[in-house]
Length: 164
Image 1 (cartoon, rainbow, N blue to C red):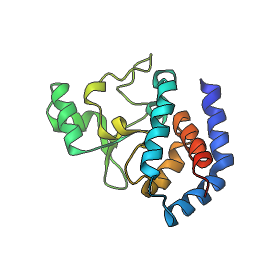
Image 2: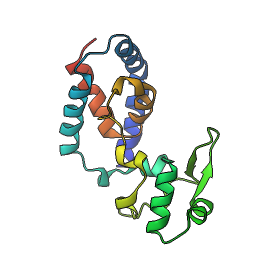
Image 3: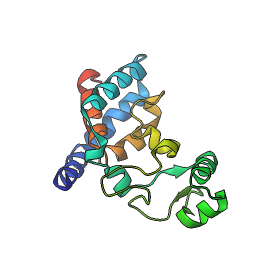
């Protein structure tokens, strides 16, 4: 899998300019059915993608934690929110709560999330390829194609299905 991730980063880098131009056009001329197409592409990709074989998102990036996430996870871990924050989180340059380090503390050695049922909203929604108003998160998507093989495949299919 490590080889595939390295290959993904190269592929994403090679496609970055093409993808950026595509998303710039998409913002200017957003198809009315974009969110429906993205939902279909997302669903089709995740029928054949097993995140447990990769978990690159958990190994290389950390989610943003909302206050609701912090309270929910702390309760699950039988901690006070402040204890959870002190032990696992830091405030980044954008004033967001993020993990102190990656890979994620809650990722086990078989790529399972130890807090899966209460995981942060950002983790539940990753790679955000089925989000409403998808055209508004192009910068995030450009980053995610280098992290997530499924996001890469979805964007490649999107460009075929919706040429601009």
